[in-house]
Image (tube, rainbow over all chains, first blue to last red; front, side, top):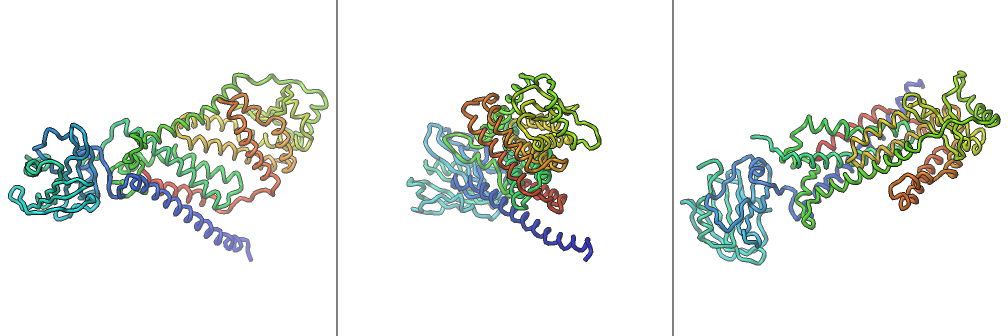
Length: 191
Length: 331
């Protein structure tokens, strides 16, 4: 047997061992990184597809769409939103949570999908039960008004479509105020 | 649609955090490969660890500059790990991301300062003036050097008139081997030859100059604890490499192991007590760490010479490529 043939025979298994060990190390590293990547979501109790962003502008950039915001905004609520959560990246949905200026917990939530016909993701659906539900209208378009419990408290929820995109508004406050806010919702940058 | 922009301070924290985390992953990845491939030869260990060391210096800046889309919020969906998600985790009202950066940067600075303070104190003490040896000691030194300089060119060796047994190589432009009177008295002929061969290996690689370059890089990367630890690991590898090359130059493996043990026993822990911040508290730990380093070197020396693994360049290339590929998806 020639020297080169011996070398080839030795190199073959060695190359296989080399690649197998490399594949093993890459796979383990990727698994650990993915686990660490998912850890903040587990700790915060949020699924991987949901992320908190710092501003409405960043949410719009993530979603690739202008958001509809109310032009009527009760003075007792604080602006900007206390929490902005985005799900699904481009064409996904957003949840804006507002708190009372005087303190206390969440007071108003505005959820909207940015793709026509797409539902609001279930990750934005808080645990609780529906008490009553009745048809309503927002700007002449059909809507549904629901009384529901969230975290042991009663919230009013109004769901409708605007330009084909699903919108949901929830409040712990007054129903009339809820409708006024819903009526005034318009896409940013449009009159 | 315009690209999302970050405030400069946020961007700095973001890049610092990424740099630290990428270095950590790169170092652990390379360490896992060193163990999985059973890399024993110090030259190959040095080469692989240099890949990890070069990562924060060259590859990470290149990733940031060449692939700015990795900084986009939208990239977080594709990323294996996005450090910024830790910003969403509430912890005693603190920003965990910022706490992570501050703690690790402080650790990096501390690791650097420990070595810099020790070095500054050594420099301030200065090197003792060269001394003259009596005839028997000069003869012992010449006898040890003769087999190591077959061409007749005597390597630059300076004798120091000190009781403390010590041999070292220093000097950037003209690296020189320094031998104390105490070392010549302590070591027998074979041990002295092996220890001098070890220092000759340092001299041949111009290790003193390399260590100054490394110190400069460590100062530039003061905020990166992984870089500091890797630099120390490389210094240990350089010692093992000098052991092997010294053996190749004519030193005997067992004689060098014996010389190392004798020198360690005569000097071990002294420097730690005198040069470190909080030296009293850390002296014991550092002495144990040095003893472990020495144990590893002696173990390697009493074993047969480690073999070079085949396909070294392929290993380096694959290690660098796969590491960079993985870290591309870590933002």
